[in-house]
Length: 171
Image (cartoon, rainbow, N blue to C red; front, side, top):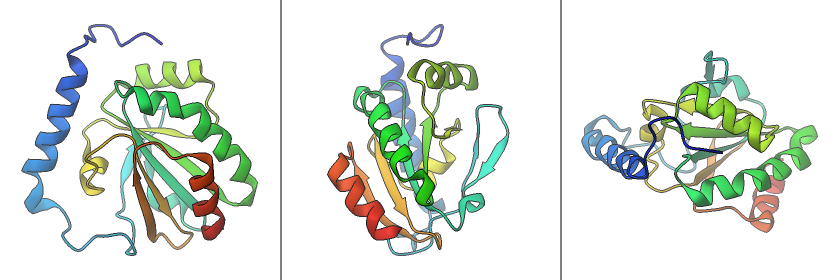
């Protein structure tokens, strides 16, 4: 898929710079007590119809949150694999939520359509969710149990073996 109109090669650098600035400048606003093993922070995101979606709406399901951006080649390359993983466990109570950082609704909708993704792709246009989850690398994936407790965070791509192991432990 082509970059958004007006999207230049340097814009990925701007996204990284903006993410770094948000994370650095928000230090005093971050929850210093949140960590793996505690309740995952509540976040409100936007779906492809620009409606708000809360993480708490998925309570009772195992949730995999995957933060990504269109300028991250590893993120984009891993989307089809994450779709296969999602389909494998969907009937058993798993929901994969891909959280796009910074792209427009129109761009993300076109991206999802071109990749033929079957799992929900949500948007974090202001990087508020990324800040709450202390995302500092892309992709970053969180595994959350049915009670809303964050059990694992993985920076970088998640392979099939790791995904199967972690999801099986939570289902």
